[in-house]
Length: 355
Ligand SMILES: C[S@@+](CC[C@H](N)C(=O)[O-])C[C@H]1O[C@@H](n2cnc3c(N)ncnc32)[C@H](O)[C@@H]1O
Image (tube, rainbow, N blue to C red; front, side):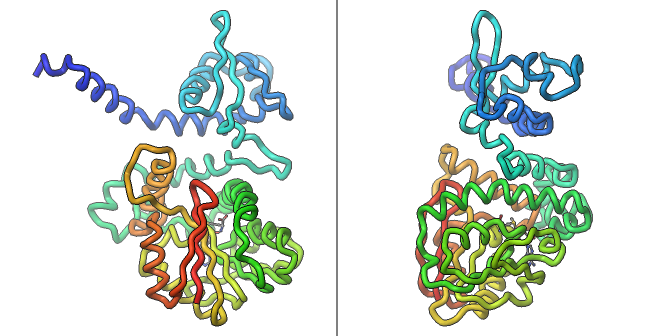
């Protein structure tokens, strides 16, 4: 056994398990730089000039405060994960933002992916993670509920800061995706009244209506507590309700990142309600993370499988990321016989179900 441990493959194996065992350092370091607002400090209105940790620190904290060495430790690990470029010259380390790092820069609407990072690492969500194995032992209760006494959506709604962070996190992720999606998909032609189910603050609908002025009316449908916080948007009516009870009628229904958090039976129920709200030939246009068949090591597969475990832990132990075929079968079972998919993004796939 001792001899075997000296082989290259054993050395690689021991290294790989150490990397996995300490992996939590990566999202926690990411959370730390978002909390400290490091990306904006480096970006400085587009300068993105390489800065040392000591040069970044005064942009984050009052003069003289903070520990530059510890900041540099965070910047080093995140450089290894492609968030920062490390520039090493004359023994000094400086950092600029990569394309990944730029997703954390606050835009002119006050949005970035930073809110999504913060949203995922709030105390209530973090309490659920040591209980992931419970989803195997007993899938009738999700780890989030075990840790916090109630389901995630209900819990967020009772805490105004969580509700607000959720809205910002959704906007920060959805706005850039929607820009890309609207360039590559033309399925909104002929639609005059569009309903967005689980539309959060209404960003997706606002962007669809701006791109397609032929859509005269938009209904942003979400839980009453969520739409109560939504801003006014031209030609959009915010409607509060429960998609499991009834969904407002429209020529077409848009739905982004909603089915994923529910079980197969719940998805059928939601899709059935959509079916009832649509005319003959009407479309349900869903954008969801769609799993590949193979479990390879690509960034895409990893991002989608990681999201799948997130859903299992936080939302529903039997909510899940699904394959295209699984979505298609769910839709057929509730009366959408026609199916098309559009690969407009690496994370989300656009799925079109027609009556
Ligand atoms: C993951 S978020 C997606 C938000 C938005 N579609 C986007 O992609 O940015 C899921 C949304 O479903 C909403 N939701 C959850 N349960 C609901 C229900 N029973 N009826 C209507 N909306 C619901 C949540 O409030 C939340 O806004």
